[in-house]
Length: 245
Image 1 (cartoon, rainbow, N blue to C red):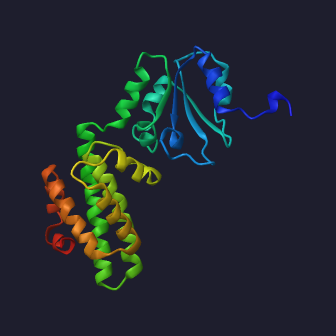
Image 2: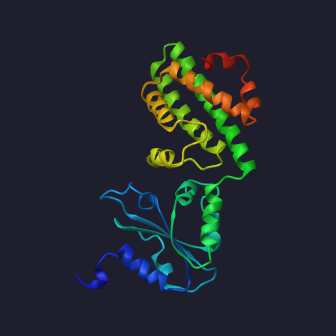
Image 3: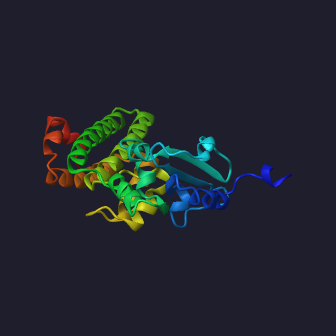
């Protein structure tokens, strides 16, 4: 096999990109950007940020994807918009900067992605709270009525919405499931014991235990009311009694 036929490596690409003045930023995301999370199967997920209207041969590598290297090649404006909103927001919030030719400009863009604005966070938290309460209510009601599978499935849904809610209350994008423990051990949620919260999430997801769900809801209710979301819960009226211990 000739040198030209060899798969493009991460190190070789970074060296080439750093020599190209059209490249204003290189940002590594995924497991390679999360200390201790890499495995033998981990590739390098790299954002390549180009100056607007810059001429470069690197554009021919758009969509490049191998077992070692996945490239996302986009302009600076496209990079600003990435994950805002969207699934990529958390990945970029914890991304690692490999190159920043904008005197900290790439870092500033990532910092914006890492924190939800106050209005955005309040709106999102209210929506996630209502979704959490809905699935919690259904889980407990289904358990009461003898629908065990439905109760467990609703419990799993409630955990998903709860995590979205708790991170929104802290103005942070929720981490992917793969990085949940990594995130919480390094950046705990204010007012929560990380180990207890993870144990509750694990137990409820596996068993749908309604007593555990009610106990957890009591802690959540106290926090969301302090955060100004009492009206969301009050709209549930008498049904709140079923959710409480």
